[in-house]
Image (cartoon, rainbow, N blue to C red; front, side, top):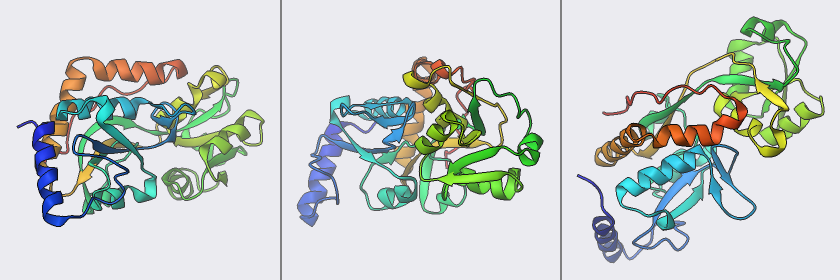
Length: 275
């Protein structure tokens, strides 16, 4: 059964009339609106531009899913979903679902459910276009290269604990700082998910400057996070994702946002989050 706006509006109105309280932080969202969490600072995936527009692969996926749920693009209220706040935003009802480079893992599944996955990323390195010094994971651990990641990120923890404990890891506050360091040669490589790296490399001002090393250091299946126990919504989202792939809209979005970086992204993954 497809969730239509009319049904959702009626249900929302009933809840509001019974509780006389609004869902926290809706920022004016009315009965015909849907709150969706994305990243605001990841070029190619989820980005809020200086003009106030929202763009990226995650944005396209979320927009497609919302359309299948009965919402026009103008009905979407985009909510910034920082990594550390995603589970809280879902549990508190601040968003209907989150599409934000949200890796499915057992720890997160203790608090939220996932639909999907809709994309399979891998941890990788971004290096300068003329740099061929790192070809394997072993090169990373034994080299003298300065490796940049973001303080507290899973990627940085993976480097320290799994891939390269001897690497010269430098943690910055954000990936943009790492990218600046890579460009001016303060660091030699930036590491995080290859999809995120491709998004940075595909920016018009960076095209041709950087490349991915292609190391595939981990599997990062991105899922759409939703409230735990909402099996009906999960089925609706999974159906929407399958339709997006079958219609070619998934491939079109991937080429649009990742193509300029020559990023060899994986095909759309099989949906596994069904119960």
